[in-house]
Length: 378
Picture 1 (tube, rainbow, N blue to C red):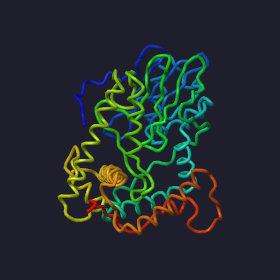
Picture 2: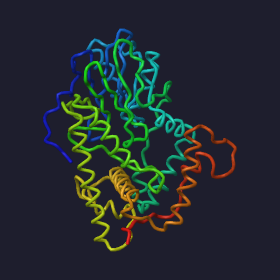
Picture 3: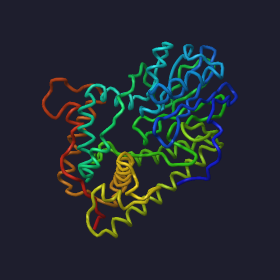
Picture 4: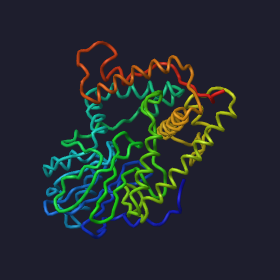
């Protein structure tokens, strides 16, 4: 779903009033162009919402952009990361090095950051390759998607929980847990100014990416989580939205309802697609048949991988609602039970470094081996 674009007013550092500033930080090679990093004034020093991609040009844009608004990056008190993705968390570590600032994120994303740093890049790459093969991707697509991976972000110093007030003296900034885009995505409600920093959860002109990691997990439902999170935002009232991409807009609740309606339409269309196919389809086959902003052959390997994740999330939501089933069910159920137990242990920090095979984070990252197919319930 897209709304009519208007010229970006935030292409340069901007004073938004009320002690809030925005700085566009470029994302190298990404059509989104930039991440909007926000700075909130407080008597104890500014706090940033997100930090941008870890790249020399991005760092200069952040440092100089803040300076043009009268904010010295060395005086930053803290960085609240809306989620662990590299265009949001990438420069948080650099800011901490320069200023001694704390880094905070939701506990669920903090657990993922610890896991990524523990298992290393090689195992993460193997995990992603196996995930793509189980989705039905071919060898060429697997190589394209896994060719370039950014490293994990800096670990946080603090973990935030739903409803918690951020350490920001003189202001009232409350963490709102909005899982879906990531398990620990946060929106931040600036209650003293009726503003909502929406991260990637609610964007004005595009719908955020919602995927499943790994694709064949039957014990998670990120799209279901995302839809519930949209309801939560809609219930906050008509707050001004300050998103991480595109532009600010006046009604976060109204846009949240629009995005939810869009996904319900997409779920209906996906069920019809499976009915028309007349046979079980892999995630990749479903993604090839879905409608994207460009024809499938024109999508890059990275975008095809993201499309497969989006397809997987919608298939999982239909499965959770009892509309479709995965095949073979017995194998998927077995893999899911093992993955669920390992992931729970990893997230809680109880896994053993020298435990039995299949109990540590490496087992969770490896997942199953066979492609998963989906079909309508007969």
